[in-house]
Length: 409
Image 1 (tube, rainbow, N blue to C red):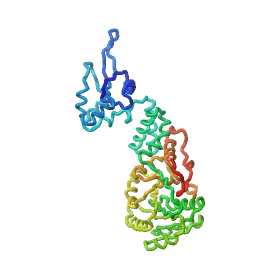
Image 2 (spheres, helix red, strand yellow):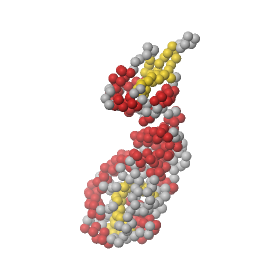
Image 3 (cartoon, rainbow, N blue to C red):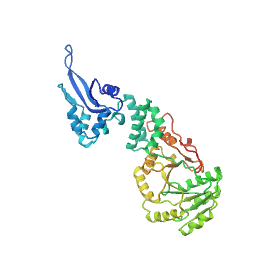
C-alpha cells in the first residue's frame, strides 16, 4: 500500500508524475490548487496543483471495507498553506456517500479521465464523437472507448490505430456475434423470416432463394403464411417465376403437414410471413401457431438498419414472442448511421446474419462478420467529414452462402 502527495505546476504534469511512479492503475483521491509563497527575491504567491494519489493495492483494501470518509481523514493531513479544492473534484468528493467505490470515477486506467497525453485524450474523444454520430448509445460508445484505451495502453499503440485494430475484438468481448453456422448440407434446412410490415421480408427471401439455387445449386421450396391481405403473394409469384422455385400458401395449421411433405425433397425451405404491427395481437398469435408447427431451424428477425431506439425496444419486446435466433438488417443503403445495429445486437443478444442494401436480386445481400461491421462504423464519415481514413463502402461486404461458409473472423 502506498499513498503519496504530488505537487506540480499543472494537472497534466501531476498526472504524468503519478503514472511514472504508480503506473496506469493509480487512483486519484483528491486534487487541490495551492498557493505558495515565492522565494526571497520573488514577491507574491505561485499557484500549483496538489494531487493525492494511491496505488492499486490501496484500493483493494478500501473495497474490502475501509470507509471513504475514514480514508480521507486518515491520509489527508492538510498543509498550512492556503488551499482551494478544485471545483469539479470537490463536487465529486462531496457526494461520496453515493459512490460505493473510488474506482467508479478516479481509477486512471479504467476511466475516461486517464493519465494519457492531451493528444491521446483528444483523439479518443474524436472517436467517441464518431461512434455517437453513427448511432451508438452513449454508454456503449463509452465502453468501447474505455476498452480501446486499456488495450492501447497495454500494448503502447497509437489511439487511432488501436480503435481500428481492436474494435472487432472489443465488440466480441461485449457480446456482439455474427452467425457462423456451418449447415449440414445432408439435411433439410428450414428458415423463417419475421418482422414488421414493409421491412423487406419477401424481397430478402427471394435473394436467399436465388443464392441457394443459382450459386449453391441447391433446391428450394417456399412456404408463404401471408394470406391476410389481398394480393399479398403477387410479388412472391413474380420471384418464383423468375428464379424458379415452387411455393405454397398456408392459412391454417392443417395445411402445414401437406406443404412440408410436398417439399420433402428440397434442400432448403424458406418461410415468408406477413408483416406484423406492434399492436396486431390477433395475427401475431396466428402466425406464431403456424411457425411452431413448421419448426424452423432458424428464425430471422428483420429490422431496418436505421431503426429508432424507442422503436427497437418495442420490436424486441413484441418479437421475443417468436423465439427468433438471428437478426437480419435491411435497407443499409438508406442510412449512414450503422452503429444502431450494434445497439440492437447487444440488446437482443442475437447474432447478425445478413445485411441487405438494395432491390437487386440476389446481389444486394451480404453475410457480415464483426470486422466488416466495425469497418462500417469506423470508416463512416459524419457531417463534419472528419472521421476515418476512407468512406465506408457497404458494397465491399461480399456475399456468402447462408448454409456453407467458413468461420468469419
